[in-house]
Each structure stands twice: as structure tokens, then as C-alpha cells.
Length: 117
Image: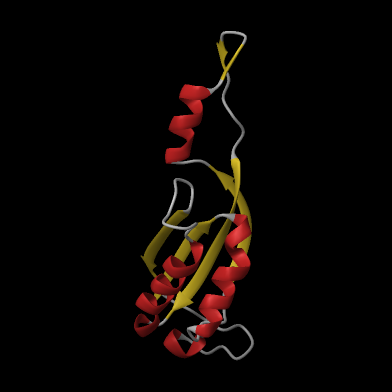
């Protein structure tokens, strides 16, 4: 079992959700987050106000967390890659992280493991 976490642009959320559902993945958790990555380097070098370097605000993003059985990990990644990119891709489109999921328990039924996902 794995957790696929994607940080994407907010305007891509609907497209990504549709693509995931089309791929057979309908159980996701979303969170509104802020952050910066490579895009920040460009902003830092470009932002001067009255001769002073100004640190820009953190940028709004959406975080998707998808608990997957192993056979769905690549399917989830491919669905996100197809739908989260702007055109041919640009700085700020986001990142995908895959981490091990040690244990999953469905509270309602107390099922554990892959069946709980």
C-alpha cells in the first residue's frame, strides 16, 4: 500500500479529479495549502521594491492524498500527470510524492490492510 500525494495548481483540481475517477480512483482527500518551489527562485530575483528585495507571499496550491493498493499507484500517477500539467508543462505545475503506507484501518468496519482502502 502507498500514499500518492500531489501538490497541484488550484485551477487544475477539477481536471485531475475527473481524470482520477475515469481511471477508477474515486477516494481522495484534498487540502488547500500554500508553498513555493522552483518558481520562488525566479520571483526572488525579480522582486525589488524601492531598491529593497521583497519576499513574495506563499502561493496557493491544492494537495491531494490518495491511499492506493500497489496496483493503482502507477494508474494514479499517470492520471495526475495527464491532467495537472499546463500545456507542455511550466514551473509551478506541481509535484507528486509516493510514500509507503504501513497500515490502513477503516473506522466504520474496522477492516485493515488493502481491503480498508
